[in-house]
Image (cartoon, rainbow, N blue to C red; front, side):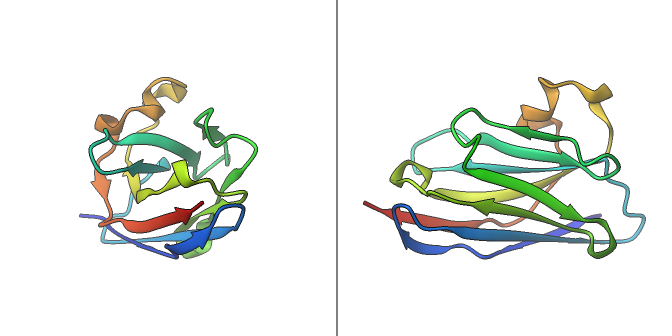
Length: 129
């Protein structure tokens, strides 16, 4: 029901910055939080960051904490991922995802891909060393 469209990926050098955007749309939009996940070739999809629409509570993977910042614009139904100090290890396809329930504020559940209901098509981020 919900459509998610990511943008902002690209090819950059280590230490550079990128800002990803994810625009959400669709009838009966009902989302409690949005997340960013990433997947490199041969790897499992891993959690990056998440944010709740109402309170703006944020969650980060340890690997990106201090470098990435997730934010949202409720009026635009858009979530952003500001990525600074990029490393080659950050190279992956980045996906935004929508979760339609609160997950009871579980710090564990918000990090699980199978808790999310809608997914974008992904945007490629490549970081050269």
